[in-house]
Length: 444
Image (cartoon, rainbow, N blue to C red):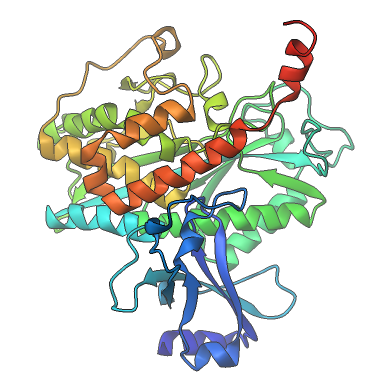
């Protein structure tokens, strides 16, 4: 706590936002006066916070977090302490780990799920390295959820029309916003790299520098919050929905990943002669074998599956290929020391802790089971058959029947996660859409 105390004094912090990421990646927690925080009194939250749906509901199964609705102890991680740059008064934020009163971790906490997978790598003497890439849309302020979203107006006074892939001028339309985003990221030590304009109207992508999976998950968690806050200050919304607009492509969180020897730092995806190693092919095979069962994490909402369609810059299967953006797993051209796999399947609406844990878990299973990958695909992946679940209901069924994934992520976590997602699906299923009223009301 000395490290935290020194930080609070240096920045003259008056209050602290003590936060945890829930299953959806939403920040939950409490705002605590500095004096109370420095007194060392632990923050407590109900364990049920972890299984609250995006609609504010809860699964009916009371055993998922204990039938008495118990508390959990939230312990600050000093490495995550940062100033909140948009706060009016000097305010800090710190991510907490969720523990039981006996000191054991809360198994359904997303941060613990990622730690659990990383521990399995450590036991093998391996260290995974990741680099997330986040796509998101800027949209005009939309106060009526029944109205379609529209691109915002930039400095020219006109909204975008048509695709503007990699357009510098299209990014420049929103220079004041991105100046704030970069400043906010710099203050928070979020290691963002390049900014590009993606295919969709006012669709952007920010890439992160490669590094430790837990640290990168923390940064993505904070980055989403940062972008939304910055956009609001420029009278627009930033959305991380997977498919926010009908006529525009969806948004992904691509994850570049490799595995190095924990002692030497040698890339285990490359053999001594510089060629792809057996572990490299087995890692890809693990992604191919287990990704269908991990889709409730990679594509966690009904909306997520609207993104995964042919010819929309999103994969539909688990093929892999060299520098092939039409497949689920792309291997970019690189030197042997930088050989890596890009998982292009996760949507940007996923929880970063869970998505990174899931993709690393699949690769780990492939390596430890000695699985064999298919031949790389050199043709158009969109011409292949669908290999991924087409909807959330099918994805939940596949996850519920996959014992190796439950063993990797934790059986209690998988049980709770499935229950949460089934509750969300049931809430959506009760809604009668405008499409149904338009086409079925008087015609069937």
